[in-house]
Structure formats: C-alpha cells, structure tokens
Image (cartoon, rainbow, N blue to C red; front, side, top):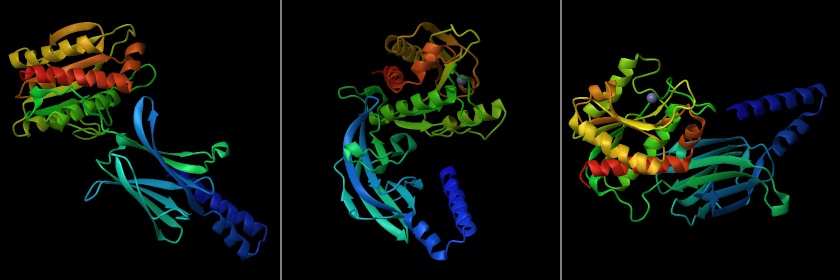
Length: 356
Ligand code: ZN
C-alpha cells in the first residue's frame, strides 16, 4: 500500500510541476504513458534459498518501480495472483506451462487498459509461508532486467523412511502459544514467542498430516484465539474449547518458549497436570525425543496447573521448547532447520505415546 501511495504522490507532484511549467496537455499524457511497464522477460528454475529448495519465477519488465499487489485464491483453484498496475502484458506468452511439482502454469492477462494480472496455478494451498514475492534490480551483466521474483517453497514433509505410524488416524490438537495482541516473551534480538511457537506448530502439523493424523490448530496465523486484549482466562478457555469441541480429539499439545530475567537460563522442559497419568506419559515421551534431538539442557518432566492442561478433558501437555531470553536459544528458535528438528522430535514423541 505504501508503494501505491508513494506513486500517487509522485504522480501528483509530476502533474503539479507540469502545470506550473505550463506544459501543454499532450506532454503530461506522454509522461504518464511512458510510465507503463511492459513485460518482456520470463524465466523459471529451481534454486536454493538458505538450504531450502525453491522454485523461482522471474517476470522482467522494461522499467523500474513496479506497483503490485499479491492476492491469494484458495477456493476452486489454488492460485497466487499478482496484480500489476500500469502494466501491459508486452511480448510474453499469455499461457506458460511450468515444470515444477509446486506450480502448473501461469496465465497473463490484461484485465483493462494498463492493468495486468499474472495468475500462478499452484499444486498445493496458497499460504503465506509457502511463497515470497519480491522485486529485483536489473542486472545488465547477466542480461536480466528489473523484475518481479516469486519464490515457491515446498511444504515441509517427513523425510523418506521417516513416518510416524502411531499418529495415523488420530486427532491431535496443537496450540501454538500466544498470538495476535499477545507476543508472549520476546528474545534479546526481538524474536517473539508467538512467532516461534507458530513456526514450530505448523511444521508439527505438516508432519502429523503427512503421517495420516488429523490436526486441529487453535490458531494458524498471528491472531488471538478469543479476540484482541481478552482476559487470560477468556483467551485460554477459547484454546481449550477448540479441543473440547473437536469430536474424537485424542490429545492437546500446547507449544511455548520459556523466559527468565537472567539471560543465562537455558534448556527445555515439558509439563502435565498432576492428576493426569496419561498427560504424564505424553509429556514424558515428547520430553525424551526433544532431549535426544534438540540438544538443549533437560530441565525435566514437570507438573503444573497451567490452565489449558487443567481444563482439557483429554490428555494434555505443555512444552517449553527453549529459553527465548537466552541469546543462543533464541537464535535456534528462529532457525528454520532447528524448528524442523524440534517438530520431528515432538511428532516422534506423540507417535510413541500412541504405541509406535
Ligand atoms: Zn508462553
């Protein structure tokens, strides 16, 4: 939006300057016509970004400062739509087939004069963690013009040979701690607990689903579950309700990060409600896997009266993955690969709990 306004302002300034200079109307026309982008470059290929496989689409044009908007369509077809203002399709083909398991084709169409849409048909869901849209400056040495760059990421999946048999057919409630108006604890470089818990929870969800479990999340984006600035009780009960109102829900797993005033505090721990032997089993299985794979100091399997454990009728556990206030552990919590290591350990623990 900011970009859009900036362009509006610069267009207005241009108009004003032209009027002050008493330029004939024709020149203003010419100036605004010249601002139209023409699409004239296309490339798609596989590459790596921070160790992750990426399918990249580059759409180049004859001039800079493209004004664009990204829209997600998840209804009949899964489509990522790039809405380009002041743009003409130029010499690009209207339909381009893509050779990627992530995306099938691209359709380029001029909706109205100087308003073009690029529609990418995706194989999977359109969610914000699976794509990234940026613009890149021209690189004349490489023969690349100014361009719009779309990176598509594969959904995280269990590594071949690693399936979690115990979770098949189970219904699992995952509760990413905090969210929305409640950041949770914040690390020394600014990583919010709500961000780390959601990132790990989403990976847990993908792994569970890949192994045949049904997963219900208390939240899937950065939101409050009850609503912004609710009381703790309202917010936590809303999370409990997600589990209670899910028919056949087997377990409730709440994911958090620890915090302490002393940045040296470190390690991982899991919790269960004192009178819940099955909660204790669940907390213990997950603890053992987190300890083995996460590599952090083990603080033990502990009891507590945490609201979400106390008020859930199913076996429940609350995980403190690491101390977000510890600089080293904050860095790990923000690392995509480490998040996946934790997610796999959690899912393996859940699978063991169900007898695998
Ligand atoms: Zn927390």
